[in-house]
Length: 243
Ligand code: HEM
Image (cartoon, rainbow, N blue to C red; front, side, top):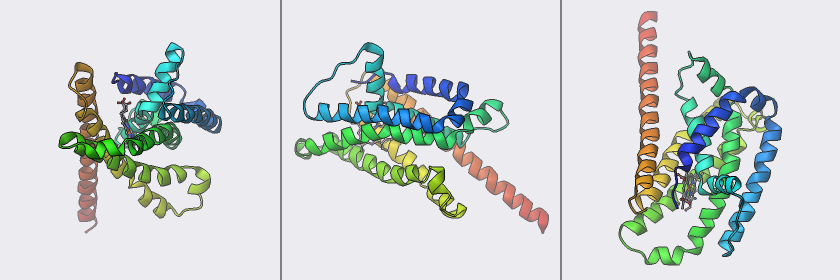
């Protein structure tokens, strides 16, 4: 079932990240703890679903748990963290949002783990049926799974090294070069989501979500490339000035 969960999640998360920026910085450990408890609840929920049980929640909690399980909540946090890398720091809103980039990426990972566990095992349990498929459904499923697993493989080391305690044990250069893998992670998330939506039957909501994700990732790539080109131009210019 596809809804506009990602768009609503992003709006709520950007609002919370902006208005509670100081509290997020001050109480980050408590927030990690609460997010981990909710995430654990969602993992237990996923285990029940994988075993054929169905769980019902009261309305708002139902949407919230659904947002975690579908990957939309984690994805919304990651999109915000990703865009922080291209925000123009001359605006106070950008500065305020960016002050918790590390903390928000940790929360993103915590909320993505239940989604990973659910769909990774769901795929393995249905692998026989998937292998029997042919044509586009087989390829979209295989690409979705490979891109998702690749993304998990990159996310886990980035997650662990985001904690200040671990980060302090690494040299700045090593930490920075590990962070570069985030670009491959974003690309893998895009491929995974693209495959999910392409494989669904066309509908207004499905098409809106597909357009939304394409706009988000393509626009980000354009901004990032522009920043890289500008940086190269500036360093060439300063090299010429020195000569
Ligand atoms: C770090 C890894 C991953 C991230 C960040 C991620 C992120 C996402 C996001 C953002 C969505 C779209 C949610 C929406 O628009 O409502 C999604 C959907 C989905 N992902 Fe992942 N994903 C990851 C790994 C995986 C893996 C390993 C699988 C295994 C096959 C997977 C299978 C799915 C499926 C089946 C959906 C559709 C869910 C639904 O509509 O209920 N994902 N994922």
